[in-house]
Length: 232
Image 1 (spheres, rainbow, N blue to C red):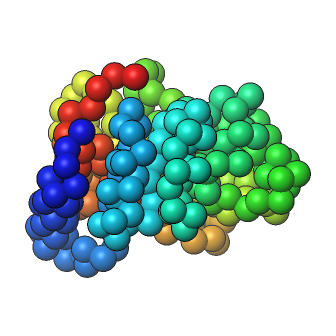
Image 2: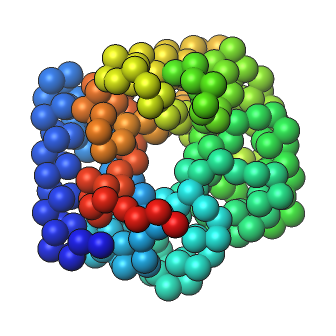
């Protein structure tokens, strides 16, 4: 993994990329947060982010969060960005403050019930397959209203927004299409249910500019901060 000095320089470079994208579309860079993806890296990756001033990191496996969180500052928030299996809901809720990948009514009901049992109130995002990629997880756009209706009936859940991962195939055009669809889906949900869903988690190291221009409030970054990751 990179040194802290390299990490800080990478963060500065990413912030400049975000600023340039915001300048193109008239947004304030403060509206876009960088979410470090610390998966496959040691706990030092989370400590680097904290030292830089960030207060959230993300993992895509529950076990990695379980291993790293006790070694990190207590005010560092942990966000789950991997596919959440139903049998991992309880351990996930014990570790993660935010779950970005809720993608079915059944999962909403399970997360809501277990959150109430544990006396926690996580923030959740709906993962929407707005790129229509059969290889990706996420509900279909047409199913999103059903998810929101179910989630609004769960007192232990706070729905804050939507998340998407664009298809690998199709390049930047496909990514832009995915991001635009997610923003439109969010806007339609807000209008129909008269609620605010301020967060749009979309954009990674290779396509963050397109995501920011489309309205992203959270870019999930791994390799552009920490360098190429090893498989784990």
